[in-house]
Length: 349
Image (tube, rainbow, N blue to C red; front, side):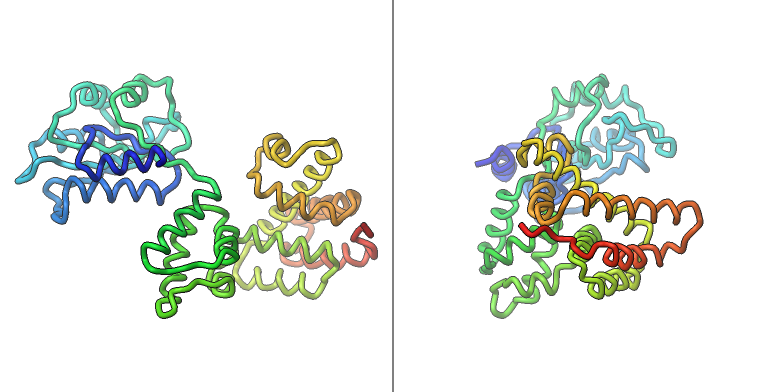
């Protein structure tokens, strides 16, 4: 059982802390904790009387604390969510309200026993140098909701399917994770859509995932680069035109193409130097799965081929940004020019 599961079990059993800090960027897990707290503390009677949400970008912490210090109305406890507490980070907001931080520090040191105060901090890290942050970390029960790995995401999807009497093919599950960038929140959102489609047979297949789950722009660009490198000119142009029809910015398309070719080059060079996948991911500071895909692709092409594509895209980008070329035409011209100048793109081995 994970630490999060243990904390959720504790909440569901009615064993609550007076102060919680839910920190991390995985929205699905954050919502899971929120729902558990609401069900456990408020039950079915979720009224405005003992429940409140305060966005720190719009409302002062003072207003939230005044609510927290007010006795609950016909109930045992109040439940208050403090959203976007940016003052726990190094960020400075010029448009936000003035918060009485001293008031908050005093509250944290001596909280009333009739209010559960929950800080929802969707940040990768907090500024631990701040006095306020130090106090909160000491006084609160900390629940981490950081992004999880592929294995854990698969477990969430399979568990959710099983609990709702659905099944999902392994290939369909793999494709779902690829199309959602291995993001739990995105995966679970798309899973809902797939379940609605398969309401009758209750079995999710690969074909349905490919039909219903949209590709991201970056995934489309990965496919476009692959088509270009393999000299599939007509398919390359058709995919590019489809992206333009979808109102994608040609400047952004070129930027992503440059980034992906750069990654292929970097991975190829580091591989030649003897680095393994995990080491390459650390050196380049990119997700290991992106490195895995790049390693599968780079071996199909010579370094000079990848380098030529990279440099020609940089030239096209310069022409656009200097006002010397039509943005929409440059990618298409690159496809035609690159294919014509490279009769032998792929390696024989």
